[in-house]
Image (cartoon, rainbow, N blue to C red; front, side):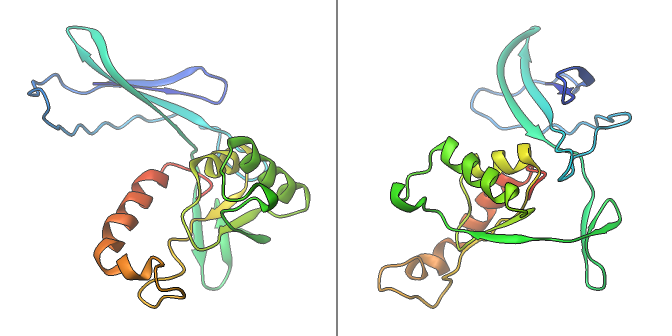
Length: 193
């Protein structure tokens, strides 16, 4: 396995290989690597710098599988006294709630409509979005990453008490853990979240 990290300008800033080992076809193996990035361009709401990590599986020196992940390098914390701390400095969150639909377009989630929504909110002075009641589309999170908007990635509104006879509350007890795990794994590398 080889992992390459590219900076926001597309320049290689780190490369590391995992020790070679044999993995049977169809089997799963885990490799862990540390890839230090010297003098990183940090992700912030004013400078949403994004890096790319490319993980490649090599067999006899040839790439047989690869996956690319975009990520940002940032320090974000919530403090009960100071509120939001970005790089240890207090910041003010100006939040808007976003539902899954797009007005007259309905519930369709087009990449450009998600990006346009984030652009409009940012131009109006919002620096944060709460995805009201359901996990957002990947396109919305990608737009927030690129445009420097924080996201409160809301899990579900309806848990075990429903609003309608056939809403998710009927399935919540059986599916909450798998649904939550899937959401965290899917969204964990987004610096906006």
